[in-house]
Amino acid sequence: MSEQKTAASFASTSTYVASKELLASVNVAIALQKPLLIKGEPGTGKTMLAQAVAQSLGKKLIVWNIKSTTKAQEGLYVYDTIQRLYDGQFGEEGVDDIARYIKLGKLGEAFDSDEQVILLIDEIDKADLEFPNDLLWELDQMEFYIHETKRTVKAKQRPIVIITSNAEKELPDAFLRRCIFHYIDFPNAELMEEIVRTHYPDVEDKLLKDAMDVFYWIRSIKDVRKKPSTSELIDWINALQIGGIPTDKLREELPFIGVVVKKDEDLETIRHRTD
Image (cartoon, rainbow, N blue to C red; front, side, top):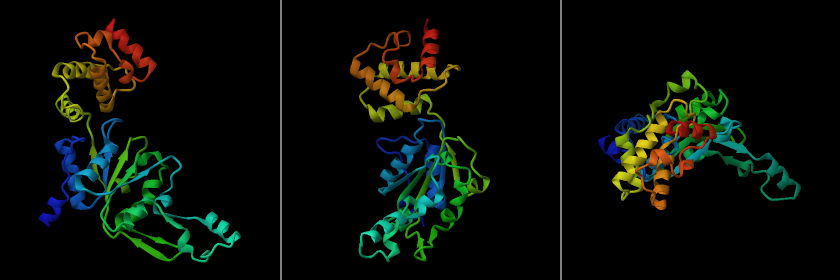
């Protein structure tokens, strides 16, 4: 048992720095074989976490991007009746073999894989309220039944399931009970510096400090509606490096501020504070 846990232990990668709490949550979810539900404000690395877990563990990543129109059935399989009808009209061989027209969805692919994979169900709260409940059986039992072919697809290797949510809708209690939950807090200055240096290890200390000071100052302004995210700070630091901008008056001049602030009203609010 200890060897399995060691082999499946997630650690930060060269491009993704995770807090100790996040590392612990991922590894607990892996050990308990439960889905990991990740929440956090936009830009805190929820989606990138699954990529980092796949990289760290050396496993394939399967991504199921959820939209408002997505149904749970699509993640299992779809029966392409239109293609079968089309083939029948043109005399194609094998039309009677229904299995040819069964296409596995992302969940089906994860179950059918010979190797253990990472399955990311991204932004689950975009779907309707019944969507999470419709997946309860499959995520519990790791299997589903294809009625058209009378075949049961059972996971050959239980996938590591990571689910992200932007908290646009409340998820059902029955679904939440089956998950390990982790909220990714916005990085503090110490962790943020570590994150930035994974992308730009040679960034000048003064540029990094001054840029982070302005960045966190902008985030602290109550009237700013869209708080800048980690990725926007990283892009801004890159722009400042490329532009060779002196940072002595960074707050007063706000060079390349459009990299950080994306709404007109927020820009006006910030500039008003610098007057």
